Image (cartoon, rainbow, N blue to C red; front, side, top):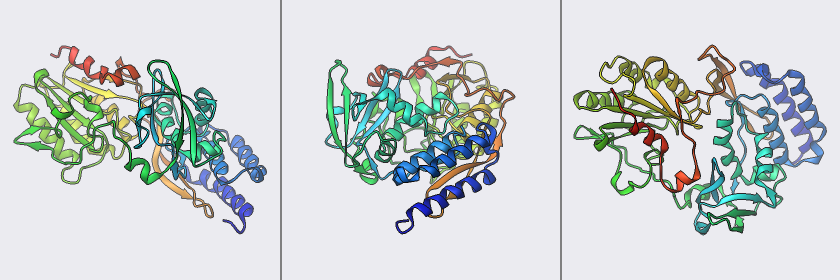
Length: 411
């Protein structure tokens, strides 16, 4: 775009203005078309004041104003702060770090470049497409790690390093001058405060299992094996089967359908009292993959009773995972525990992509509308038993959702 920078950006913005309304299922369901036109004109009139990163952030802001969580600018991010953040009830904390920054793990972030975190949250909120507070809490920490996002929002003015103020559990603060890293190095050099596995074994000798749970017993189950689309573990002392459904996708060597059929067969052949389906980490995929399991579970006279089936949901329960949650709600006697879902019950989805001609920025947009319930004003699927996600529990490796399940007597 270097030769005709200004003209090329104008052409891209015009392309966005014309094509996105044509392609989206119903772009102006929440944002008035006049507001969209006004935002487009304002961006075009101010192009000379911005560089490419600021323009990208302003495009993201326009798209976020539609309030469709499935419609978003795919933010170009090549450099990252060397931390992974999480938004707990107590604030935003560092939960993982690249090598060399271990001393700042589990610190609360109070400032970036001398700007209070509360102001930064307000700025980033404007560029995140979301339909409820839960999905904002899910997504904002990811945007916070991006140097391009922080630069585009004029929070930082240097891509190479970022200054943070963090607070320890003793209340003392410290200044961190963190060198940014490339996207590849960002993931590769993380210390790894979460537990991951690479094996892909659904069952051994007829017993559902994860990988070596015993060696990671201090880490709650939902924080283990995050790289697996789904896995299970039998909590023998509690007579409880735990199914973690991280992603609505088949695994390389076994399908969701076959895995869950084996799981139910094992439950039927053994005196298992409770089944937990954990959807907290599941951002979606293909909702139909779990349909046979939900149908079989609904017809299972042994398990389909109040107090026998539990579904854990949270801020990352989104898209197809939300459809699965509602199917479980409508077809079984499941008790729901956790946080309000990041997905909105009635929402737009089934995404396709628009690529801008010159900048090659990609915009994801919705092509279908899904009506799950009659009340279109309901923002989330809310749990029967609410469990807040706190830093105090995280650092103590407590899982309040599992504790709640195990404290309830089944039929």
